[in-house]
Length: 63
Image (cartoon, rainbow, N blue to C red):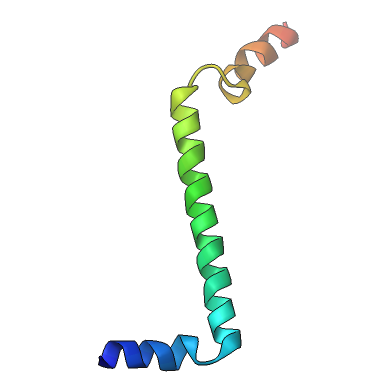
């Protein structure tokens, strides 16, 4: 029960600290989800995105 008491006393008891913890957790979750989704998207569409084929077209326009 000591862990829950210390958690309540340090995070949940004050509203500002609780809200800051929620916003920080939401921000971290959003960053992690976006990074994971982008890496999955890039691995599925490898070779078909502009960042993968841009070099071919840039070299062709220089010649």
